[in-house]
Structures are given as structure tokens and as C-alpha cells.
Length: 330
Image 1: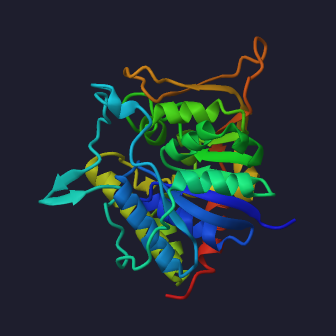
Image 2: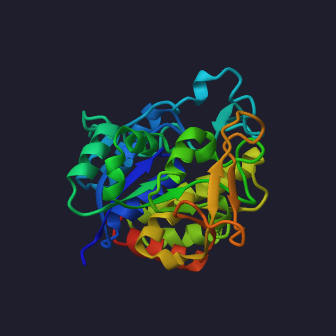
């Protein structure tokens, strides 16, 4: 059996960058292309950052720019009134401090995204593929939801959707939501109710696999360009979150990397439950909230949605380090 065919859908900031490198360097995966979407940053920045990472890798990976806005959220007055309590950008000593910088600290990209829109490329690639493809969206679900609505036949060509999004007991936007679901709640709902097998790598799972400065040093000790850059991203995430008051502990999760590694070895998610899932799209204080129920006694989940609550942090770091070590020497 050959490598698993995947498409990575990203809103590239700091952890997306490490996820891209991991997916590209893992021999168990065949990365067909990368699509970009709005999310951590506006589309122009997520696309530019993605190109910078691909250029660092020195690999021929096509990049397609996708949807710059959510499906309907921005059309409704006051819909985003319940913004996150901690500003995404904080000014300290006259400098902007953010977990996701608008431009990654990499050379300006000389490569360009393909001319075809991400959604039409996704649609065409899925329908023409003789082998089922796994989608790994780690930003807003806008591109994926649009494809599913454009032509439902694509569902027969998708092996699984492994998404990073949602939170059960942990949230990081508004009061009860996670960023990727909050940035396009309707899109998240469409994906969860598509009938395709969906594995949700939630904040509960990613926060069970935090890394600190000790892991930063271990990555630097690998002495490859990719590991060095991953160490820089992890250090920045810890430093920025602590400086802005978003987190007290000197640790950070690499959320999107966990979704990629779950495509390689599903056992890295060591607490996964088949549950009925829904997303709040009311526009109220719970906008974008992931809701689940396990009441098997009364109802069997209608859709094949599997919620990850916990991950093996040691295995995640070992896998990530193994692949990043394969990059070019620094």
C-alpha cells in the first residue's frame, strides 16, 4: 500500500508552518497540494506564508489560494460582536506581539500560487482521482464546505476529513468556541453533517500535548533547516502567548501538526469517541461552539463524526522530530 494521498488546507501562521513541513517530509503521506483560506490572518498573508514555507522546503508542492471570507458570517450585522477576550494583536513597547505574525520570518517567496482557485482545484482533483483522498483542513472550513456544496459527488472520493477544530472543555475564541469553527461556523456545520467520515482534532486533544522550552532545545539540536524553523515557531508561540497574557504556562500546543500526524498514525489520538456533533450558528454568545452528545442509549450518531479528546504528546513530538530531522542541514 502506497503513501496516503492528502490535501492540506491551511491558514498559515506559526503552527500551520510546522504542519506543512511535517506533511511534506513524511514518506507515509503523498501531499498532492496545499490550499489556503482566511483564518489566523487574511488570505493574502496565509497564502504568502504558505509559499515561504514551501520555498524553505525546496519542494515542488502546488499552492492554491482559496476563500478570503466566511460563507455568511460577515454578512450579518453584529455577528462577530463576541470577539475573543484577548486581542489577537497586542502592542508592547511600541511593537506588535501576536502568536501568528502577518509574515513568517522567512525570505520573501519568489514562487507564486497557481492561477486556479483552491475550490475549483479541490473539486477537479477529487472527482478525477481514482484513489480516495484525505483532506486535512486546519483553518476555517470555508474551502471544504464550498466544495461539498458545489458537487456532493466529491464525498465518494474523500477517504476522511481530519480537521483541527472545535473544543469541548477548552475554547480560545469568544466564550465557547475555537478559532477555526468561530471563523466560519456555517462551514464547520456543513463539514460535520456531510456524511463523510470526520475526525475532529479538538483543542482538548491538542492541549493534552503541550510543548515547552525543553522541546525547543531538542528541535534545535537536530540541526536541520526545518527543525530550526519549527523550534523558532514553537519558541515564538510560547513567548507571545505569555507576553500577551493569553497563557501563564511556558508551553504551547502545535495544534495543526497533531492533525497531520493523526493521518499517519491514528493511534496518536488515544481517546476518540463516536459522537453526534453540531455547531452553534445562532450568532449569539456561543457562536461557533462545537456541541456533542454521547447518549447512545437514546440515539446513535447520525453522521460518522469522531471526536478526539486526548493525544499522546510523547509520540507526537517523536514523530514530528523524526520527519523534521529529514530536512536539509542548517
